[in-house]
Length: 596
Image 1 (cartoon, rainbow, N blue to C red):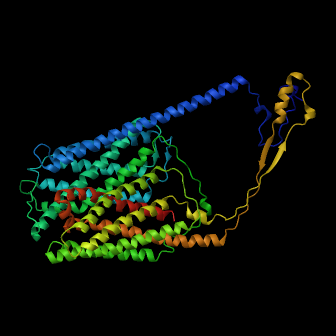
Image 2 (cartoon, rainbow, N blue to C red; image 1 turned 180 degrees about the vertical axis):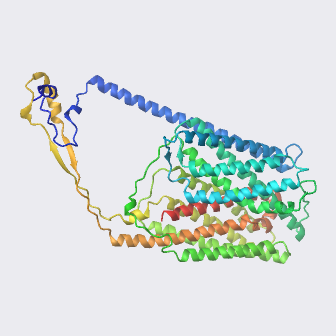
Image 3 (cartoon, rainbow, N blue to C red; image 1 turned 180 degrees about the horizontal axis):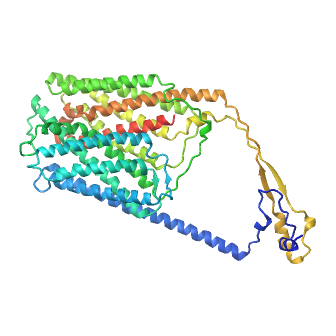
C-alpha cells in the first residue's frame, strides 16, 4: 500500500472505480493567490478579446471606405463620359477600370498561390454562401460575358484606325479577369479567412467594388443605348423632335461584321450586368466572413427521407410555364409594334399593362398563400447568424427601392396628367400592384430563409421522452480519514468530491407521429408549388425590361408630368435595380426550394 498517497490525499487512492472518472490526483486545492492569478488571466483574455474586436471593426471601416472611394471615382468618370465633353473620354474610364481589374487579378493570384502553398492547413468554410447552383449560374453568365468581349475585340478590329488602344485592352483584360474570377468563386468563395486579415480585407473589398463599378458601367452603357433608340422611335412617330447625336467611331469599318458586333453587344449586356452584381454580392459575404468562426449546425442526415424534388409539383410549374410563354409572346409583339404607328404603339402598351396586371396579381396571391401556410405552422424560426442570409434580406429590400420610386412616380403621373390615353388607368393599377407584389414577395422570401429544415422536422417526434441517464456514484468512506491533523482540511475537500459517470444505454428508435408528418407533407407541397411559380414569374418579369420592353419610356404619362430629363434620371436609377431585384429574387427562391 502506498502510504504517500494516503498522506497526500487524506484517503486511499480509490476515488472512483470507473475508467471514465477522473483520478484523485486531478483534485487539487487552489490557494487564494492561484485563484487571483486565474481571475487576472481571464480578465486579460477578455480585454484582449475586446481589443481584437475593435481592431477588426476598424479594419472593416477603413477597407469599406477604400472601396467606396474607388466606386465614387469611377462614377465621377462615368458622369463625365456621359456628358460627352472634350475633357474625359471613354478611354480614360476604361483605363481606370482596367487598372482595377489587373489589381484584383494580382490579388487573386497571390491568394490562390498562398493557399496552394499551405495545403495542410484547411480553412473553415461557410456552407451557406456560394452554393453550387449559384456558381453554375454565374459561370453561364460569365461565358456570355466572354462572348461579349469577343464581339468588342471584333468591333475594334473593324474600327482600329479611329479607336484608342484602351478599347481593345479592356475586353482582353476583362476576359482574363472573368476566367480567373470564376475559378476563384468555384474553389475559394466559401473560405473564412483568418490569416493576413487586414490585407485580405482590402483585397476582397477591392474585388467587390471593382465588380460594382463594372456593373455600373454596363448599366450606364445599356441605358444610354436604350435611350438613344427611344428618342429615335419617338421622332419617327412624330411625338417630339429630338436631335440624336452620333457618338460612334468616326471612320469606316474595314470589315463586314462591324454592324453585327455592335448590335449584338446590347443583347448580351443584361447577362454581363447580372454577372457582375451577383459576383459582388458573393464577394461581399466573403468579406464579412473574414475573421469569423463557422457555426456548424449538425443535422441528422440519416433521419431525413430522400424525397424527390419533383414530387408534389403540379400547379406551380404549369402556371409558371404559362406565364413564361405568354411573357415571351408579349415581348415579341411589343418590340415589333411599339414603333410602327400611333395605334399599334398604344395597343402594345395596353397589352403590356394587362399582361402585367394578371401576372403580378397571381404572384401576389401566391406569395400571400405561402405566408398563410407559414402562419399555420408552429415551428420556431431559425435565428442563427448568417452573413449571406442577412445580405439576401438587405439586398431584396434595397433593390426594391428603385422600383417603388418608379411606381409611385407613375401613380402620380397617371392621377394628375391632362391627357387621357387608353392605357391610363391600367398603368395606374399596374404600378400599385407592382408595389404590393414586391412587398408580399419580400416577406415570403425572408420568412422562407429563416425557416427551420422541414425535412428534419418531419422526422422529429411530437412528444419525445426525456432521456434518462443512469449514474454510478463513488465516494470515499469517512472511516478512511487521515489521522494527521494537518491534513484534515485537505480530507474535507477531497471527501466532498463526487464522480458522476454516465452509463450509456442503447438508443431505441422513436416512431414518428403520422399526423405531424402528414401535416408537414401538404405544407411542403403548397410551398414548393408557390416557390416554383414565383421563380418562373420573376424570370418573366426580368425578361421584359432586359430585352427592351419598357413602357415607362414609351407611354408619355411620366414625361408630361416630370419632364424628359428628370424622368430619364429616375429610370436610369430604377431599371438596373429592378433587373437586379428579379434575378436576385430568383436565386433566393431557388435556395428556398433547395431546403424544402
